[in-house]
Image (cartoon, rainbow, N blue to C red; front, side, top):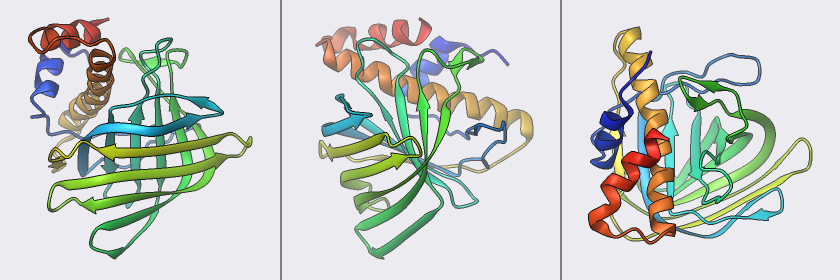
Length: 222
């Protein structure tokens, strides 16, 4: 299915997308639909992927009905506008109201060199071990920090230290409907993550507020 990327970009900028996503693993199996999507703005005091340092200004959190959760991080990579890493796992705990811990069992790595479906790169999946800790409360729409560390089966290390800018997070709970609508919503969530990357590029290039919407729309269309 083809969608209008200009419409998607505008919808994403207003954070009004209610969406469902599926993530394909190395065998082609698909994860269950997403029932929660959260976006947070801030900065990364540390972001390292396989011994290479990056910057970031946003993190997205996904949760599925089956219990899998993920923290997706669009990287500020001048060589790759599609560079996104995701820490993902099925086991989590919340021993305190403001502390959420997720055990990582895989890393999803998306880049411009990956195969594409509907114009968007499909991530590779690396079996990994690690932990993510989120300080804050989703119900109160406040998250102060997210920290993650993981190591994949090839010994590559991944590290994230993210601090919120203090603005309320964007929480979207999702109700699954028919399969056609699910497919469209899956594309919209993927586009939303790409839009977060374009917002980050606008920040990095110092785009003035009055030009940000046009910049992000053009970025999404490229």
